[in-house]
Image 1 (cartoon, rainbow, N blue to C red):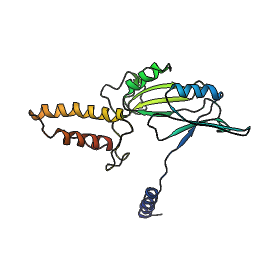
Image 2 (spheres, helix red, strand yellow; image 1 turned 90 degrees about the vertical axis):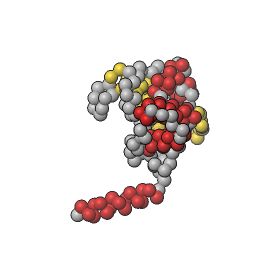
Image 3 (cartoon, rainbow, N blue to C red; image 1 turned 120 degrees about the horizontal axis):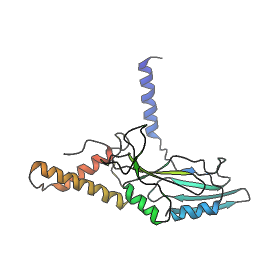
Image 4 (cartoon, rainbow, N blue to C red; image 1 turned 135 degrees about the vertical axis):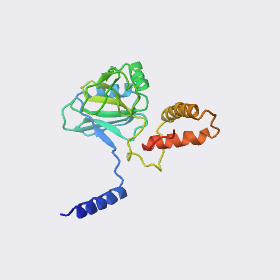
Length: 218
């Protein structure tokens, strides 16, 4: 097969994929005690969507994290996986310290915040000093040992977000983006040595570009 054909096939595959909507809807979590798990995820502040029983062989419980488009299922007959074997379940947050503090206030045991300097490097204590996106974490587990990881993301990698589609899932996320824009704009005015009367336009450009992973205004 020629390289031209490979590129052509890839282009066709990409075009077809763009025509199809495939939204991750649910992740199954294996648990040993349904009521205990239900109390735990309720204590997290997650929304209980459903708890339904079908005969003697099935019970499905669904919870959804705040502002998440994806939910979790657990119960009886939901998954054959052994309880506690779910790992690497990422929960993206805009402020790692605030998210951790909220869980601690709810009585959840959460690790201290840590960060990584790069892929494959050992974790270091504390939030990433430069507040790099994707670099700061905290972890916790449910009563069965299913592992969750909080990850601070403020700027998406290029290509992860449609540059023409800027959206926020909560007022908290929007407020955090505006605060970052405010700090960056202050640095911008220091560089120019004058007040920027068009600061709303500058803020808008910052927020849109940050979310799309594009170069930020300076």
